[in-house]
Structures are given as C-alpha cells and as structure tokens.
Length: 488
Image (cartoon, rainbow, N blue to C red; front, side, top):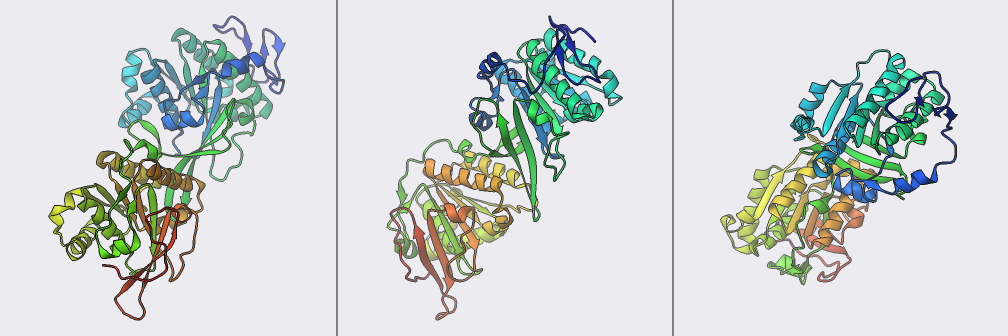
C-alpha cells in the first residue's frame, strides 16, 4: 500500500485482482459512472487535423486511449506528435514515459522531424521520464507514484506511456493488468488533473488481439497503426477501432511520417481553393472528337494495352491545358522524366504547332518509382507538389504499378480522397492503366471512381494507327460513342 499526492489513497498491488480506492473495491466490469461520461463529451484535440475531424474534435478529455501498432508503424511518433501539438497549439504540458528508449535518443529523433522538445522542456511544457527495464513488477508502485507526482507538480495534461506492453508482461495475468490499468490511468491520472493518456502497445504482425487481450476493453478508445505490405509495395494507415462518444465505425486514415511528425495523407489538405474554371476548350482534332469541352472536377481514366497510345493521349490533354495558360503536374510511375519531356516536345509540335519552350514552364514532370518508397510517402510528396504548383490538371501515368494495392482499403481511401478533392476543387485528374484489348476489366480504385472511361487500342486494319473509344461518361461535355478515331 502506498499513498500518492492525491487526496485519496490508491492501491496498486502486484497481486491484486481488483483495484481499490479509499478501501473500496472497484470492479472494471461494473456499470460506468454517468458523471464521467458527461466529462468525456469534452474533447482534447490531438492537433492532427483530419484525425480530430474523424473523432468529433479530438480524444475524450481525461480519457485513456490505447495506441497499438506493428513494429515500426509509428507509435512513438504519434505519441510525440500528440504531446508536441498539445504544447505548441494549446499550451498543455505533456509527459512522455518510456520503458524502451532513453531521453537523448528520443529528443534527437524528434528533432529530425522538426519537433523541438528541448525547447518545450526549457519552457516547462514537456517532461521525459525514462524507466530502466529491470524487474518492473517489483518497482511498479514507485513508477506509478512518480508519474502521478510529476503530473500534479507540473500541471501535466497529456501523458504517453511507452509501452504498456512491458507492464502487461510484468503483471502476466489478465486480472492484474485490468486492475492496474483501470485503477492507475482511468482514476489516478484523472484525479491528478484531468489528464488525457495514450497507452502504447505492441501489435505483432498477424496478431488479432492486443497484449493479453484485456487492454482494449478497459480503455475509452483504441487506435491501431498498421504497416501493409503487398507485393513489394508498402503503406501505413491508422484504424479507429473504438472511441467513447463518437460513432466512428472502423475509420481508416493513411498516414506518413515526416516534418511535423504524424501526417495524414488527405488530398483536400493540399488544394488552396477552387480553380474557378468550369471547362477547357479542346484545341486539337482528336480532343474535339472526344469532348465538346473538357470538364473540370472530373477524373478521366485512359486504359488500353501497351503501346496503344495512352501516354500520347494524356500528353495531348496535358499540353491542351498548358497552352491555355494552366499549370499541369505530370507524375509518371513507369517512364523517366526525359522520356516524358521528349514526347511532350513531339506532340506540342505535331498536334499544336508549338515549340516546347512556349509551354514547358506550365508543365511540371516528375518520375517516381513506387517500389523505392512507401506509398504514403509517395502520396505525401505529390500532395506537397500540388500545394506548391497549384495545377489545374494532374496526370498519373502508369497506375499499373499500384495494381497490388487495389484490394487494400487504406489505398482505396487514398484514391477516394484524391478523386473527391479533384471534384470539390474543380481540377482535372487523368490516370492511365494497361488493360487487355477490348473493355477494360473494372477493379477497385480509379476504375470504379472515374467519371470518364476512355479505351485506346491498335487499329488492326491500319498498323501504326491508334484508336480511341469513349466507353463511359457520368458528366456532360463528352461525346459518348464507340466509333474509332486516330490519335494526333
């Protein structure tokens, strides 16, 4: 038995099966306190914009949130971002308790992400408590007492415990883990001054339960960070499993780690405003046969077998916008930048009668190998380019490289975010993919979400001639037909 700085004694005994406050047993599965639920309606913003929107403003105030994740998924970075944004944006002091990392390593790594915890510590807005990995079960009472003492003395409002898995391993039984978490974090830190706590937990690859299986039932919310690997392609995402007071379902938020820490991949964040353009005039014979006008807010999918002219057609569409004075971002996932620019020069002269220098300043070409980076990092890079360039037209050439991700719900959420942002901000998205001759097979991803589907094929009667069919359109300005025409 020990007495904390709280007004009531708290019992946290290694062999306890139930927690006790002021000598009274409190069972974790008892009906919950209605007054506590009332308090939890207040929200504590994480400072992570899109996540706060999903959570109805942030985490429940004075709550305990379980943050589980695969190795290397970004748990430490998420916790650090929660503390850093709390201090910077809201002036709330934070405490990081680590069982796995020393203070200097933590501070050095976070500084590479642009988070200066050294400065926050000097300003009294941050404290770090390192716990040597010894026999935790024997020193647990001392550790908890120190956490509560720091929380009270420094006016701590946000705490991250990294990790609760070490505590669970020390206590070993479900009953003792449940009692400890319920007593220490739900009641102890709440009494210490309305502290909102994130409990970090390890989630091995392939595991279906977190820790000993009781942690997620004791806390107010569960966030899970995952790393998905599909045929060499990698992406990270966060799942909201539960959150008291908010109907979230199984919300999925793809994210990356960069300057500023935890960064959701959300394309609405990168567009400054609506383009103010309703449609573009088609300037070439080919484009006039396809469109009465090229509508903004549309996603155009161009599909066809290799060598059928997909890249030629989208280059023509890109140049059509650039010649009219609009910025274009051309992202190639399969060709080198020099090859794309060479093709642009050819089409500019052949189809528009222009030389490249007249339009090149409006076309920004980048070549990316998605197998060299995490997909969420690639998306984050494209978002930064969009924010910088403010293009009317965005081309993604060679989306076949992303084919293994079409069954990923996290990737689908990225695609939806992109398509919805294009529609909302009045841009034009043009995506190419390879398909067999004839009607392209519709899959998840850009296929089902595209507003206009165009097929390119070879003309068997005239070798070297490429043909175009408009197979589907959901909006006006497009001549929906199955006749064939030549490109260029």
